[in-house]
Structures are given as structure tokens and as C-alpha cells.
Image 1: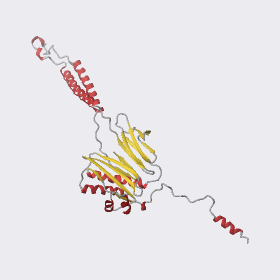
Image 2 (image 1 turned 180 degrees about the vertical axis):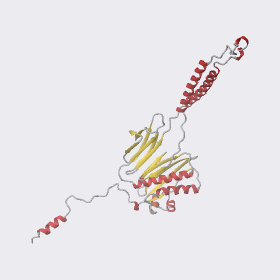
Image 3 (image 1 turned 90 degrees about the vertical axis):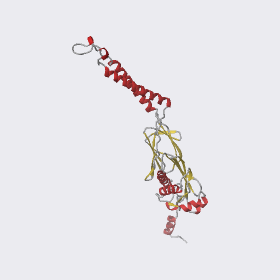
Image 4 (image 1 turned 90 degrees about the horizontal axis):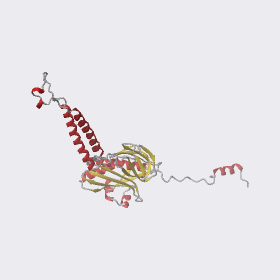
Length: 331
């Protein structure tokens, strides 16, 4: 029995070409927002705070995490589960946030981790310092860090990570994992993963940050640099130079003021002419000028020595502010 030619052609056209297979989904595709639920596990604190402060910090962190499109596990359920992955998964969590806060007087160190609840793998880490801060500022900083974590999670797998870095002042050298990559201001793509960022500049203290870069996420950092502290001996010499310069300058001004004035102790009798002018006058102009110039030079050198060797001032860590798909950090 012969098969009609039109039927045979239709059957051949319906068959898929050899070697054509369905494309597999990208391994690093972004996680669908509707499948993500984040749990905030109880805070780990080194230091003493009241329960109201602790709850306020948790509220700040949840507020930042809630800025994205991901759902949050109810805090009561997360508190009951603690840090146990199995219990957190039973509560519906796909990811969890661990937070550690270390307090020393009014200085705070905040360390956050975003963890995959299924495997227990740490996806991102964040570390921030807040010097001379109040509890309200810590809550705001936790808010910003929560927004940073959810932004990184949202951008997971979407292109290479970007480092946007500047220093105050600009012009510092930037090293990534020990390799010089440029000077600030710098915009550069990096490989995903944990990276050590180090900035150096002559006359300033080197600054170092350890950051975890995620595909598709931006790290916007502005790092203020502190001048290199001088030795106490140099500061003492500068102070002595300032004091000596002031004395010399004052003495020079006094001698200049006396120049050409009559020496009253000898201005009597025949020492005074018919016009009442004394023959004996102070001749201190040159000496006064020399002392004044010397004092001014010594005063200037002392001030320069003090400025160059001044002790570094503490700089308060500011907040990480969400800006679209990235973050802007000020320290």
C-alpha cells in the first residue's frame, strides 16, 4: 500500500530535527519571589539590653527585609524554631537571617548572614560598625542591612557583581584580594564570592573591608580615610615649637614698638636739645624684626608638626541606604 506523498511530507515536517533538545533552565537564574520566605532567627547579643530594645532591633531588621518582594515568616514562629534548620523549614522558611550584635559602651558591631534553610549554606555576609551610636541608630542600621540582604537575594544570578568605590579624599589605591585594580573613584565588575577590599593612600591609614559579592548585585561604598597618626614625641616637639614661636614673636613685636623711643633714664639736662628731643633713643628695630620673623617661622613649623602628627578622630559609621537594585554605603 502506497502512502500519499502529502501525508509523508506532513509526517516528516512534524518530527523534531535531530540533535535539538529542550534548553535547560539557567543554573543561576534568579529565585522566584513567590517561593522565598525569610525567617529572622533570634538575635545573638554580646552586652546587656532590655527586651523592648531587642524587639525594636528585630522590627528594624524585618522592616528592611520587607522592602523587597519576598515574604517573611511570622516572628513568633521564627522565635519558637530558634536556629534549628529543620524547625525553620517546618515553619515555611526557605532562607533565614542570623544576626550578631556586639556592644562595647556605645560602639556596636553588627554581623548578619543570609542562609539557605535547605542546605545551611551561607549565601551572603554583612558586617557594619556604628561608633558612638544610640539604640535607635542601630535599629535604622539593621533596617538598611535587611534591605541590602533582600536586594542581594533578588539579584542572585543576574549578571556579574559590580563594585562602585570611592574614598574621602579620592585617589586611593584599591586592592582586591591583594591585586591592584585601580584608584578611587572606581567602578569595576568582580567575580562573585568573598573578596577582601583594601584601600591605601600615602599619609592615611589603610582601610580594609571583607565583602561577599553576588551575581547581579552592586556594592556602592564610600570610605573616609583617616590621616596616619604621628608619634607623641613629634606632637610634643610641635607644641614646644608653637610655644617658643609665640614668645619670640611677642618679644620681636615689643622691640619693634620700642625702636626710636627715648631712653628716659638718660634724657636729662644736657642730653636734651632745645627742641626737647633726647639724644638717647632705643635702637631695637633690627633685633625686633629678627625675633619676630624667627618666632613666626618657629610658630608655623610647630603648627605644621601638630597637624601632621595629630591623633586620628573617631568616625561614626553611617547607614547603608537602599538605592534601587544596589546599595550606597557611607562609613
